[in-house]
Image (cartoon, rainbow, N blue to C red):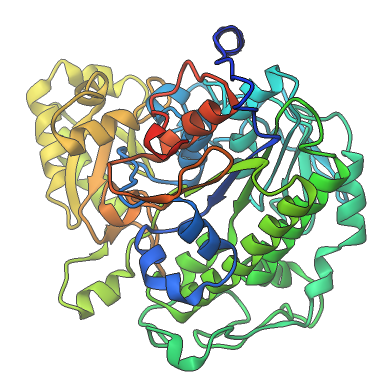
Length: 535
C-alpha cells in the first residue's frame, strides 16, 4: 500500500498542466464489456443503431488491439485496463489462485482487511482490492479529489475498475440476489445506491421473456448450435423465459436474469442514475465512472460466439450503451466527457463446432496433465506426491517439491515434456523460465511471463493449443490465442480524434490515454497514451 500511495503522490506531482484552451473533461468514463471479441465489431456492426454504433462511427476505433499475456480472464483484464499495467506488475493474473500460506484457492478480490457491506441481505465475506499492487486511473483521479463510481454484476469487475478507494463501488452478491460493496469503499450502504436498488428491485423483470430483437433473417448462425450449454430452465433455442425453477424469483431466476439483456439494461440505467444523484461531472475536478457489462460473458460461455444469443445480446447492448450515452449528454453535456471502451478478454469457439468445421479443438484433461507429470517424477526420483493442483494455467507442486526437483533439472524437463504431450497442451514452462522473460522475443514465452506473479503464480505455467480448453461444457477463454487476446478498443468524446486506427494497441493503453486527456500521469503503466487519436 505504501508503494501504491507513493506512486499516486508522484503521479499527482507530475500531472500534466492543461492550457486554458484544453480544459479537462468533466467526467472520465471507462466501459469494459466482459467477453467481447474484436471481430464482433465487424460482424455485428450493421445490427447496431445506437450506442455501440455511435462509438464506432463517431469515435476512434483501434482495429488491432490485443492483450499480450497468457491468462486472458476477467479479473486480470479489468485490472490491466484500469491500471494500464500487465499482471506481472499489478499482481492480479487470474480470477483465483492458490495461496500457499493459507493452503487454499482464493479469489482475486480476497482482502482480509475488508468485509462486504450488503444492501439487502446478510453477508460476511472478506472482499476488497487488497491484492491489487498498482494504482488505477480512478485512484489517481481520487487523489485529485475526483469522485469515483463503478458498478458491475461481478465483484472483481467493479473492484478492479475502482482500485483502492471510491465513493460508490457496487456489484451483485455471490448468491445473485442483491447488491454489495466493501468496507474498503464505504463502512455502510451508500445512500444513492441504496435508494436506486430499493426503488428498482431485481425481481421486477420476473416473468419477462428474452426474445430475438432483430428480424430472423438477420441472424448469421443457427438458433440451436452444436454443444450449447443453456442455464437451468432454458433450452438452446429462443425464447428464453425469466421464470425461475419454481415459478418465483428464486436462485434460478436470478441466474437467468444475469444471462439476459435485462441485466445489462439495468446496469446502464443504474449508472446513469448514479451520475445524476451523485452529481458526477458537476465540479471543476473531473470525476470517474466505471461500468462493466457482464452478461455477454455469461451468455458467451453458455452459447458460444457463433450463436444467435450472442448476436442478440450485442444488439441489446447497443441499446443499453445508447441509453447511457444519451444520459451522459443530458447530465454532463456532449463533448464534456471522454470515454474509453474495451473488453477484458475474447472467447474461443465451442470445440465441437470447431471440429465440425474441420479445425483443431477439444477439451483437455487437467487430471491427465497432472498424472503425466507425476508419473515421470515418480519414475526418475522415487515414490511420493509431487504435484498438488492445476488452477487455470498454473500448476502448483506440493510444498518443497519444486525446490527439490530444481536439483534434478533433467527430471523437471522430462516432467514438462511429458505434460506437453497430453492432448491439447502446447507448452509447459517452469517459473524459472518465465520469471524474467517479459521482454522475450518468443510471443508465447513473453505471454506467460507477463502473466507471472512471483509468490502467487504456479511453479509451472501451462499454455493450451488454439481451440482447446479445460471447460467441460460450452466454451471459455484464458489462452494466448487471437480469439481470446484480440478485443475492441474505442475512444470517444472530449479530446478524441475520430477515425479508424490500424496501429497495434493494447487494452493497457486505455487508462494512459484517458489520463492524458484528463491531465494526469500513470507512473506504473506499461501501456501508452494513444496520442494519434487525440486532438
